[in-house]
Image (cartoon, rainbow, N blue to C red; front, side, top):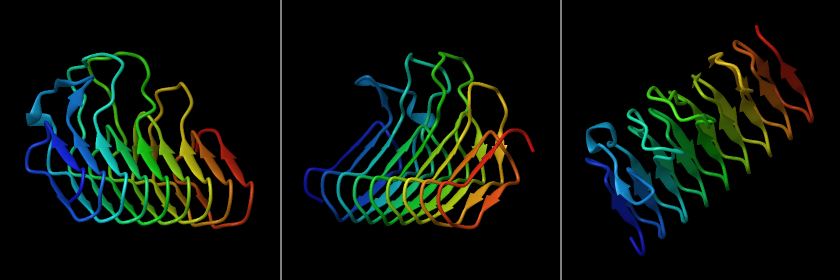
Length: 178
């Protein structure tokens, strides 16, 4: 496992690949490792599972995430989330305001594709199945985006909407509350 590292994330594993990082630290300072762990990267190159925060927030964590294969995949401050294959796919929190209870994406999955993104303060059970530059995201509200899916296509977007699905195509958009 060339040039790979696990920093501040207990019970985590990197198997095969190179230049992969699992980090449970905030700006180089160790975070509370009791909230960071159980993360796995298997194969591929340039993957990251990490805590990100604009402050040393109390509940910042990344736990029980999985990246399998591909190139340049990122899971940032999420829990129970998965990226399998593809290139430059991302699951991350969109939380930008320092908070003592930072919310994070949970139980979200991206399978294959390129530059797909799930970016929300609190998305649960979001799914992107391949395609190119598809997004499930929120705005600045506190709404939780749950059970939304994009099943392929290109540049499709679900924004601020739960229980929504785009089955493919190009430039399809679903916006707003349920």
